[in-house]
Length: 162
Length: 337
Ligand code: HEM
Image (cartoon, rainbow over all chains, first blue to last red; front, side, top):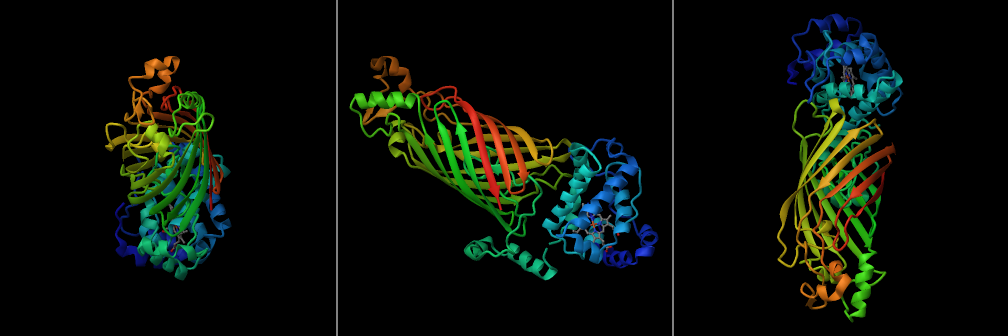
């Protein structure tokens, strides 16, 4: 998971341009967020399918943000610095991709997107709790949910910066 | 929760020497308090009082504190065996997901064979053996410290590197007379261990491996070393836990034990009865200690909330001093803040 942090500032500026965000981010240089995550002993190939396909992953991301925005520990970060609609769209791509789906992720690298947010371990864990709640909400079984947790876990080291 | 400014203060505190935090811990404010780990990732508490499984310490720091705060817990453990009941209670405190300090008091009333031996010993006019009929109790204080060296048991799923910690216990057994009778070399000693712990999310399984440098007999409940001296050795332990869902885990554990007191007689007063046990007829076998067994357990942990977990286990502890087949029920309650 090596990323170039030099694009961090540019990224940050870009993401603020919510309307143009997608088009501009898509034109960014190659990012490390490409392809399925390697996690020992391996994420099964049918994981996207088990999540209910692209629509199922989208539903999961929708409920993820529902729980995030209800969590008073972290919702203010997203209100202040985020763009929930755009993040739902980009996370739907990212989650499929890291689970092995044949989808291109068009957003910023995890390091770049979160570099200036000063996210703590506790805030990251709050998002993980929202992730499990979201799995329950969309009836994705716990063990399938853990494939996604395995796929996203390594981003911790890019996202948590304090 | 907290603004960025407060956040950087906490970061500074986390980065500062943990000893500074320790000195100031009496004035720990709400800002230092932290309970933001994910469900069950704080583990439960071992019979030695450290964060881990039921008998084996893990590399995880007990409690729900992240690297930004302090968290702790209280626990009570009850093990109900045919001839013994272990009651232990204690406290653990985790500092910045880096250092764990613990204290546990274990009380082990014995029954069965110890009563028989106690009666016989009284009849023979023995005194000061530490074995009294109906009333033989072993008490032990265990002080523990653990330092996480590197790794992340939870989030490092893309590599095989586990979370690794080193730790130690200082154990003080308070029934010195009984330990002398059992021919243990010491009633007070230390142990050191290194633990490696990792969760494999794709298979929802946690694996822990521990190597402990120790000379303990029955984790120190029957002292340290034997008549041939008190030499430490490395013994292996392991835990495997399968996460059924975010609140339930099932698993098993193994703990290698030593042989310091195997086939040793009990020593009554100044008299070693190794050659005499035959004269005591039916009691003879009762006076020779059995070969100490390795410990096993099968457990089931349930955390109804972040503040409370219960661990139920079937503990298979085998031969304990004079008594065989010590298998029984284990219950541990752990409250965190
Ligand atoms: C594994 C966990 C996480 C994943 C997969 C993730 C994913 C993403 C993605 C895909 C974006 C959009 C990037 C872009 O706009 O190009 C994003 C942005 C953002 N994320 Fe996360 N994120 C995670 C954890 C967190 C956490 C823990 C927080 C805060 C508590 C957070 C807060 C934000 C915010 C505020 C933005 C918007 C940044 C901006 O537009 O400048 N994220 N994240």
